[in-house]
Structure formats: structure tokens, C-alpha cells
View (tube, helix red, strand yellow):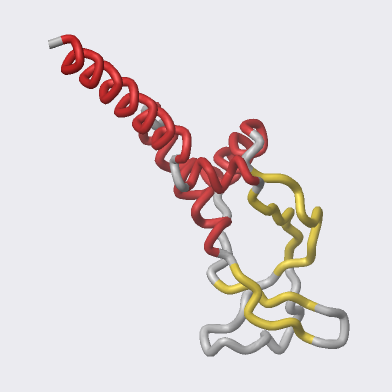
Length: 126
């Protein structure tokens, strides 16, 4: 299986994959969303999605949404277009912060600020 840092890398890759998704067009009738750069699902991504849910980085958007793939030419298939159902998620504010590594930046900024104060106090004493 994966080591800890490899698993975290897969989780962050999955999180960024959700962030990259976008609706290219809405087909009528039925308001069917065509999603570009959709997250490719496999066993690793499903486990990563479960971890993201547990951490509060993603929330359920649509459950059991009919899902299918376009042909290589980018058109709808002539036979049944929706062969499976998938759950779709959206990022939370915490998910965006995890992507941007906001917590790490806050820690770095606080550390630099504390060091600057210590240096200022040390210079003022001499």
C-alpha cells in the first residue's frame, strides 16, 4: 500500500482534482451538466474522498447523479449516455485552505513575526 506521505499526496491530488472541475455547458432538456476535467474515480480516489469528507474539506453536492462519458470526439454516445451513478462533491472553505496550505503560511508568518520581535528587543537592549 502507500506510505503516509504518499497517501497524503494522493489525498491532496484528489482535492485539487475536485477544485479543477468545471461545468462546460448545460444540456437541455433536463439541465444536464457537462463537467470538464472531471475527477477520475478509482479505489484510491474513493478512499481519498472519504478522508476529505472526514476532514471537512468536501461536502456532498449531489448523491447518485447519473454519470457517463463522452466519446473521444467529444459527443454524446449513441447508446445509453448514463451508465453509472456517482456522488458529486464540492469544496468547503477548509478544502480551499488545505489546497492553498493556509495553515502552513500562518505558522510561518507567526514564526517570522516572533523572531522579528525578539531581534528588535535584543537590538534595543544593546
